[in-house]
Amino acid sequence: MNLMFHAKEVIYSEALGGDIVQVSFQEEPDPDIDYSKRGTLLPPAIKYVAISANYEFSSEKLVEWCDGNDFDGGESIRHIEITRNQLKLVLKNGFRFDVSFNTDERTFKKMALFLLGDNT
Image 1 (tube, rainbow, N blue to C red):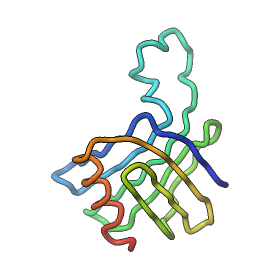
Image 2 (image 1 turned 90 degrees about the vertical axis):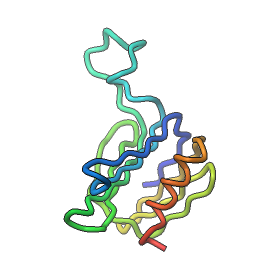
Image 3 (image 1 turned 180 degrees about the horizontal axis):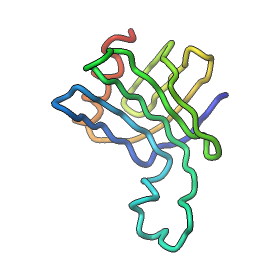
Image 4 (image 1 turned 180 degrees about the vertical axis):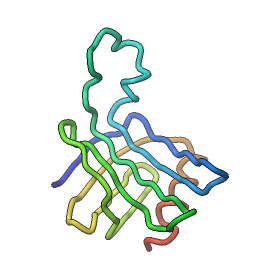
């Protein structure tokens, strides 16, 4: 699978004092809180890639994704590159992701530190 998209929503989040970290890149903002889409029975699937780690148990980063139709996840990272406005990701199963995005400098620095921390 090769998935390419532009992420309009980029989120860096931490929980439990930094024990859990997640970075997500979504083609559109979360439809569950996008009030302009009220009235739809089920929110439409959107393209996204989310990378997370639970440091309480392991430092391994796992990836989940949706290609706009199907969801999958639980895969490890083989190679990752991140620049100020692009993420290139190759998983151990060979899936490739190329995501363009825009975010503020503070979020970018946190994301880059998390994503490149032990995968370089």
